[in-house]
Length: 195
Image (cartoon, rainbow, N blue to C red; front, top):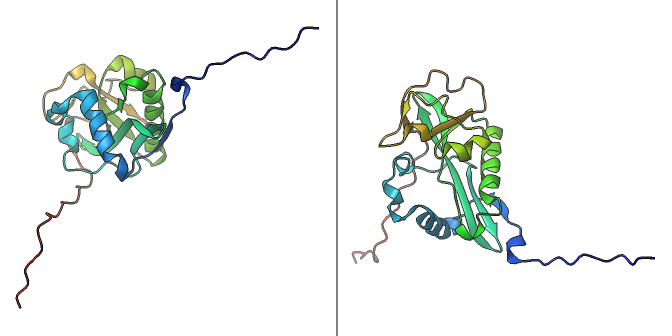
């Protein structure tokens, strides 16, 4: 009789699972550092950033990926008008370079799109690599007559519809429509009171 031998499995830190959850206030500094590392500190000058400046992400559509207590991925979606049609713009999507082989980016995409669909949104637009985003259903089929407020490569403007025809006939500028971020009150020294 042959004895059953249990296979040896070496668990490495790369095998550690990750979790996707709603973004929290404590994620802000780590998210910003991850975005700077992924896109460079000049990322604030990019065309799609103009759609996000001074705006809050769409409710429930700012997600963080966390692994071993550390933020390792982020994605957010924003309300826009795409030539007069309501839509969302996805971005930026970023994953810590040390974790890029773990499927975090794809998991963030799937969860973000499922959440957008569940919340009743009809279409999502992004500016990105068509060969990467095609697997999620994005194409340039409905974006040929749309523009962004700044320079962009036409073949990188992609969209997915959750409702057939949501972007039919959409043309013109994509503009932000989401809620404005609250203005921060300046913090000053103690106010002197008259006696």
